[in-house]
Length: 434
Image 1 (cartoon, one colour):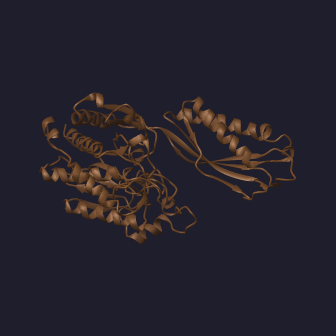
Image 2 (tube, helix red, strand yellow; image 1 turned 45 degrees about the horizontal axis):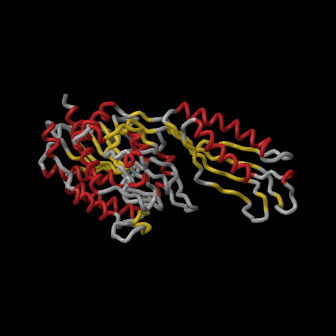
């Protein structure tokens, strides 16, 4: 295909959005507006509603002439044949959402891949090698608490047994394996890049941040994903009566945790990085008892691995200081760190980035409407990039809001992003012949 042929392939915007909103009947969440599509999503991974969305994906891609493979993590690979055999160049994302999520995070990327297949069929395009769409399982990590877990198993970075034994959050007894069996998506193909190799992986996603909208850009050319580490911090003090224990005799774990959380923000800001706490639990949980035990999550992020390491080291010193000097004068507390997850900085492949850049200029008609950027959030492309050339495409989202029912991207921006995705896949496929 030449440049003119690329430009002739147009996404059907109406059809793309109709399909996307049609599948959002499965797992519809909180309403935020008056129009039929102005609701969020609550489609947790491997739930009954996730099964219905998966069934739609399988049936639709099969009807478009794709072969469908389901692996042992429930990852679904829909592959359209090319002139020659070989690993497919794929568009990939996810259909699961946060408990109180929106209609675009992940979902848009999968639907854009399906729309690509429809456009190729309508124009009778024969690719050099196979192309495909991947629906990765439990990207969000909202139900089973490791995000991007199934692409991680595919990349052989996470053990299959570890993933299968993940227990759902909230006190339930279901595991990933039990729910894969329950909904009929425990595939027989090994979850491995060796069994299901990809030639390249492109992912369309909403930005989940405010930069593109603020700068009036249409496309983010994603060069990589910033590093992050997740920790569970436990503060051990002593339970005590609130009315009879003076401040000088307290070992107040809650007060210490609050000051730690505040310090983590200050230290991260000093390093031009980010730190957040999203989970905090304490005991004994009584109004008139000073808490003796507190656990809180800590999420540290930066584009550079060295910065994350420096923040961790500095915070360990600061937390120790708080324990012995600042919170109580008479009683020391103890603090322990548990590292839950480490995701090093990811740098995407130059050839894939070049394909996205050329496609963005072709679709928008101007290089000024795109900008290069680093993703602040993790995506399945992180693990995909460890086993095949990879890049991502961002489109604006209103006010930078995501993981929220009011997450929104205009139909035009969805269409532009889908066309950039399609061209990127086709450009990469063409490059494999050279």
